Length: 200
Ligand code: IMP
Image (tube, rainbow, N blue to C red):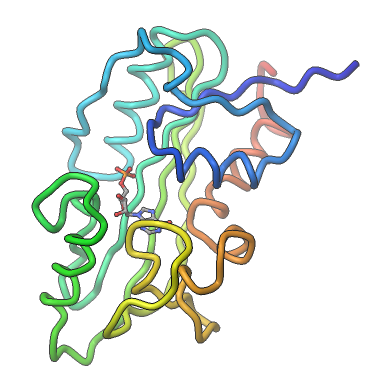
């Protein structure tokens, strides 16, 4: 019987875990750090997505056996010089409060016709406390003027990906997972683990 390799996600964000698990199907046994209560909380003190993903991947990999995957992601808005960027999860002043974050974004963008933005996701793959590789995925799009849709999380109700006329929150998880920054980074991770990895 084929036992899929275990991939531990260095996150406590259930939405991210669900998205990544859905995208990987049965190719990997996907767990996150909620399955390992002994794992410490890693502070995201970096100034880039890569630095933060690295902190999480290496911090968790130093304590757990097997492949560890950390992602750091966020929204970059051109009219705001790339903000909220690495501060995406606390843009409204309270960590993880999506309602406040979206409100803050709408206020900052009020009256501004320049709406171009992108989601960026950087993933770091680690094993035995060492980085094995890192990957980035991007999805371009624009910020609309009021929230639309009920699916997803974070800024999904305000973001329309390029080539679409619906927000991520209207498109729903299945469509989002074919387009998203996270799915694009993850496709590169899977390629690496399947084809390029020196020690599977
Ligand atoms: P992280 O958990 O430090 O990577 O924070 C990511 C933050 O960026 C989240 O709290 C969201 O506000 C935002 N974000 C990242 N990915 C997405 C996405 O797929 N949809 C909507 N918002 C996202």
